[in-house]
Image (tube, rainbow, N blue to C red; front, side):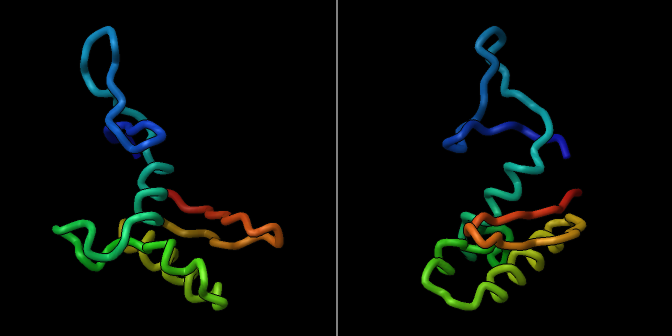
Length: 96
């Protein structure tokens, strides 16, 4: 999916030569925003977002993975897999 691009701190990326914002492949940034934001953060879609920080002390990783799958699908993605490795890395295979 193409959209306006954000930098690592989620600020608009601006082309220094033209002053215009940059557009490009944005699936990864959409996924990151859905993961980090909490329900209610998006005023037009208050039930959207995962709020990953809420799951840090939760021993039930299945509820976390299920919420990711549900929210990504609600956003229009096709989710092939969502897993956590033994090393604790989140792996998501999803696309628009």
